[in-house]
Length: 342
Image (tube, rainbow, N blue to C red; front, side):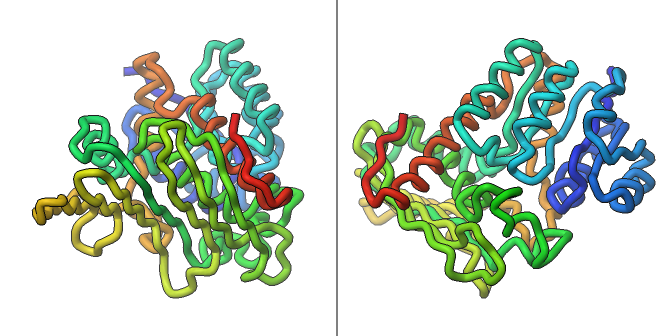
């Protein structure tokens, strides 16, 4: 089996708690290089994983032996680093949100097509067992017509997660572009598209900056969404859930109600109209509260798709469609109108 040589660009928390340890856990992967603009951080991580340290990703990309790159930078750098990596002939796993605009996303997709390389967006919620099971049940018609849903993702804020704490780039609009809607909301736009198996066509949203000091990005958002078939629901994203994380979803359907990650003991509960309840123990969802101890399965899916030359598990096109919903929500808040999503 050929060893994949991996480089990780950006050595913050998502790299330290997710990408790097999950790569290290794979026998067929070598972490060959790491890059961070903070030299001491790059050197420390490089020493830990016996990799080569860089402070300029463009120098790193000159290494012909590197097969793939994880892009774990602030959001504003996702597109330029991804495009440069693809043009250098590397496969790319890019953190979400994939870009700051549809134009950037399209350029990333085109770069992957031109290079003939994998582009995967790290939407890990698709790989949560309860979410995969919910998608299967809905697709099979088990619940009949889907009427509505409510989904939320909130916690106390990235300062409890980021290696830079309250000084994190997450709060800087120039670097982050977007706050909780890009950090958490895009997870849920992607998840609901995945579970429901259809696209959102309209969004109305309230997006506020109210919970964090010294921040110029959103920290609370509530959206109303409508799918192409007429299913309507709400999506909330927040950095103000101070007492703990909530990453739950409830789906209301013709034949029952489905509750995902809404119970401490059962990751999926289906309450049928007959009065019967089926409870599934499928394993917990990965959370910041767990310290990243539960594998996201993103790295495994990415490396497997490279080895098998298969379709990207979460393509650039999928990432762009989920980004479009978030951008529509921002536009809705700005214009105080319901926005159509292309």
